[in-house]
Amino acid sequence: MSAALTASHAGLVRCGSCEKLLRARPLSPGARARCTRCGAVLWRRKPQSLARSWALLIAAIICYVPANLYPVMEVAGPGGSEADTIMSGVQAMFAAGWYPVGLLIFFASITVPILKILSLMGILISVQRRSHWRPRDRAVLYRVVEIVGRWSMLDMFVVSVMVALVQLGVVANVEPRIGATFFAAVVVLTIFAAQSLDPRLVWDAMEEER
Image (cartoon, rainbow, N blue to C red; front, side, top):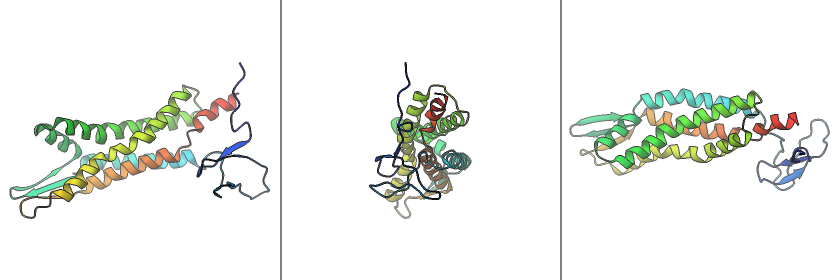
């Protein structure tokens, strides 16, 4: 069975800005092709995609350690103050009987970031090694990571809501702490790492073999 014709083989390039599909034409040295609709510079693949994704992912992994070691918020009241990390906050939710909230925060703030980091790392390694292993599944995994990853910001949403609502002066006071900054950095860096990766690189090894 003959291989399906791809856009690249047909001489077509997709604009990364407005998604228009254009026909690639020979250019003079030093010239750059631009989209006829929005004027954005056209690239067959995102430039330095792997390098930028690796840099952002490594930065996210570095930030993930203090994000879990340092407290994300501190609750101060007449009886003193108590600082909570992500895990101690989940344990406090369980102790108070708020099991659905505790499970939701654990899933969004612990499970999702770890799975996202491991998934991106696996995709990047497979692309670098020109792997032919299950390209469709890797492409689907990338789409899932790109869509679901932003939900790990839920923990920061809980902190921001509590900071906004629980400001009762001498009765109680909630303040964000350095762990929240590191965790927000993890979420933002992994989102940028996913967006920097060009998923078409997953298929390039297969196309080159054909």
